[in-house]
Length: 256
Image (cartoon, rainbow, N blue to C red; front, side, top):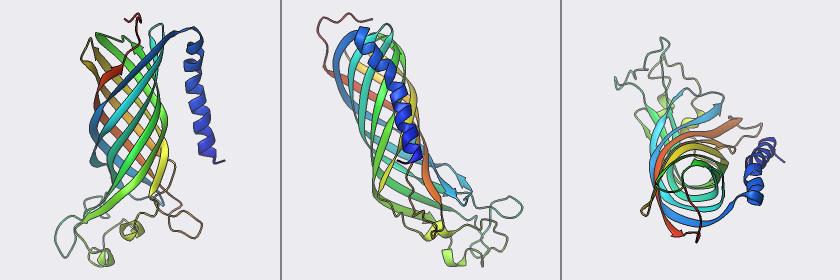
């Protein structure tokens, strides 16, 4: 088994232990909510050899479902699943030898390159919240695996790849293989974790705000000894908001 995968399983089991323990002594819940979410992504690719980059901004939106199974003192245990559209990728930081933007000697413009990769993503999250269930707020943490399926990719640049060094001899970004390579792996997977705040209205649902980090365990390019890159995985920060409304509520439950 892959070393990173073993670490994830151990981490998930560690995270789930308080939930399983509370199931023995907590107050049972059978609450099911659905809703929608949207937000902003900030992405890079962890290339080895290294490629200097800036954060690439993109959008994300989708559907959220959540099942709350237990209340233990002020902690609320739940599982959450989402189906999201997300834009990931990278934006290169192309510099000259004096650490200034590299000017193309043909166009006279700073060189730019970005690759946008569009995915359908499915995070499966264990959630632990601390605070009020109704008419108030609580903080929560999310942790779990995430899976993605590539829909498409596109490139935005203002220089010709074959002339990258001929037209600007002071260019210091020597790693350019990624500029002409198509994403080889359509399936992506990794681990995601988030920290957020939820405000629950008495009868109108739940409003959630969250900052989330996604670390990809798969590479977007081949990574054998014969390939150029030994690593090319996603690193993404996500800021998002969601609105959930209750479909099923536990009867006669004492809530605070």
